[in-house]
Amino acid sequence: MTEPIFSSAAALTGWRKSSYSGSEGGSCLEVLDGHPTGMPVRDSKSPDGPALLFPSAGWTSFITALKDGSLSASA
Image 1 (tube, helix red, strand yellow):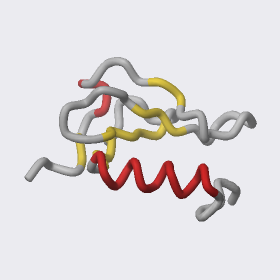
Image 2: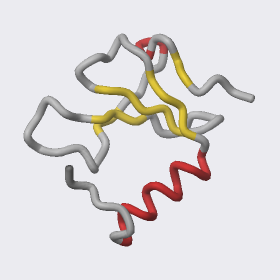
Image 3: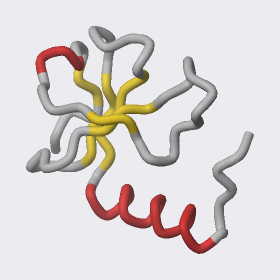
Image 4: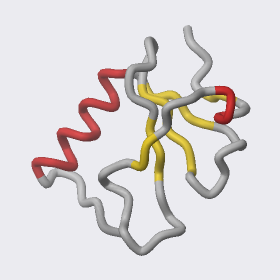
């Protein structure tokens, strides 16, 4: 099983701001597309901190729920 946390997200390159992050700044998620074992996610305020690795199927289910309204993107 793949470790679900990268202790240093800075070791990975190609991060982009998630399209579901708010435009108010300061509270953004960054994701890394194309990782072979899932979807790495990190806090943009802490680029050298840890990143979580979500399994591909779980990430797809999460995004589907956001898009179809089953899960609210607002706080």
